[in-house]
Amino acid sequence: MLKKLLFLLLFFSASAFSYDLPKDPLASVQWDDMYAAFLKEHPAVFDEKVIVHAPVFAEDPMNVPITVDASQLGEVKEIIIFADFNPIPLIAKYYPVKAKPTLSFRFKIQQASPVRAAVLTDDGVWHVGGMWVNSAGGGCTVASTGRLVGDWADYLGEVYGKEWVNEDANRVRFLIHHPMDTGLVPGIPAFYIEELEFETEAGEELASIKLYEPINENPVLTFDFTPDNKKSTILMSGADNNGNEFEARFKP
Image (tube, rainbow, N blue to C red; front, top):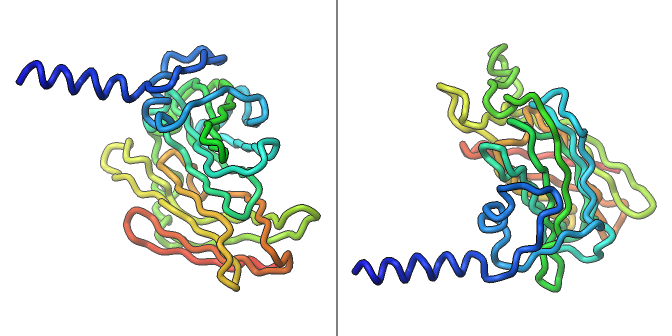
């Protein structure tokens, strides 16, 4: 029995690193663990074509702006965004079906950490880019402003946003009122938006995104969609981990 357990342990350890890991240009001791947790199904390369814009120092660790741009890679299947040293590393997973592989939002950071975007292309390779973001810390373990004031329930799920028709894409930017609790504050359970989906009124699927606890309170998100009809109204629908549902329409 002991030999069998040892064999299984060695088997799964080997499976977790079935691809040779590239040397991390950010020199993070967590890189191997991040690869094993989120990327191990495909090989990974570090690629300057994956651009991550974020502040070098996060003055407000509860609202760190980030923009990811992988448009130089062409067709993209999935984008995973994570921070190595966050207590909850996974931030978002984006699936740009008919959208540019770009997005912007804000997130919480607990301490200085590499913040990365891993982009899966059609050839089955993760292209990884990122940067160090320094911080005084505490972003994931502080109660939201709405919790402290006590009025978050009055605005839960309200959406404000707009659609702009640009030459190469339809940009949608919106805010959803939600406390986005991480579950790391004593007495406050995790409560966050889990998924948002986007389509046109004609039912054309545009994109979907999975959000996780580190996304900031009352998140503001920006996407660039490429519908067949650039004059399309874009519909958003989603839900949080408590089953609350959200809907919005964005007209050009």
